[in-house]
Image (cartoon, rainbow, N blue to C red):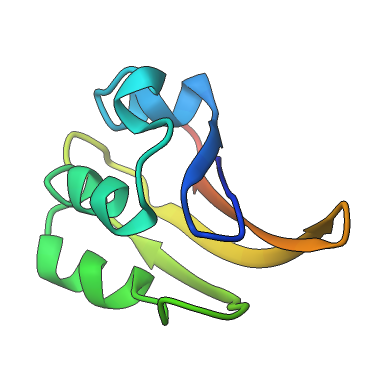
Length: 102
């Protein structure tokens, strides 16, 4: 999972997501959402489809979900994003979850 600060900068990343994307958490932390999602694009069978499905407006809350197919996986990946309020500010949580049995 990714946790984005109100300015859409990554402030938390799960080790499991970093591993799935063949990255280290430090490769993602402190970077803007757009830059991070572009790093992820090469991990999907259709990077352009991935980009269009995870696109969001640069400001304001957003919620979305999509089913994607990563490279090197025989399973789909569910991506969803939702706003969450922390300390009176709107952050965003983005979850990437492999579906089905391994």
